[in-house]
Length: 294
Image (cartoon, rainbow, N blue to C red; front, side, top):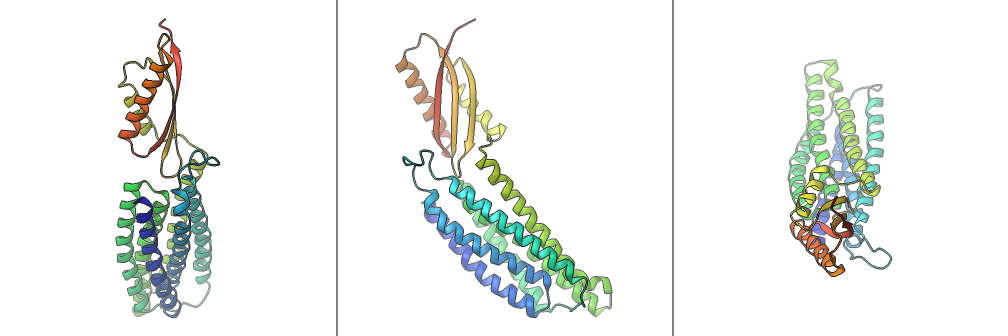
């Protein structure tokens, strides 16, 4: 179910981005719009990102095996990082082209370039909302990466449309500084792409470096463990994301006179409670320590 939905979202993203890429690149080029052309480059990056996601989804959903005892979930994180690097490189290229445009003769963009950007804007809103909904429901980093790409395109497309409109307005009413609106919009698009790439790269690095999950979620796990009166003390708890699922390590103290079976049964109950309440927890490793009253 999870894998098929992810593939469906990725394929929709691929097809829509291919159409938008050709539309924005062709119209941006012939319509003299750097902003729309830059937006087309970003859409081309989206196509590449979606293809990578399609290739890795099956691997990320494979169960744990002898060589990969913790599963293959980090494959999605690696993809997210690759997409982030790609978007970063795109942002550098776009800002270079935008700045260089200020030193050349201004050519006013066409109305068609503006309408292409507007169509892209509404298309991306639909794609972003649907992708993000699926990503949250199935806790998929790969689909979330696609959603973030759509998010960048939403603001980028409307910025491109405004930039083209200002350039046309400047040419019609002979307002020189407004004629640079398209160039300025392309630089703004580059900034948006860079911002999204930074967010994706930071999250990927945190997961790959096995950073602890957020304090609020960790406290929620602690509250579940404290529901068991046999637990005298939580000595240590930590949890890390492993792609679309979480691994939890827990050390607890119980009365020293408890038998091994009693300790085992308690650990099994705690693990079951956590996994029942939080369906994104894949594994809970519990270590028991003896508790001696002071």
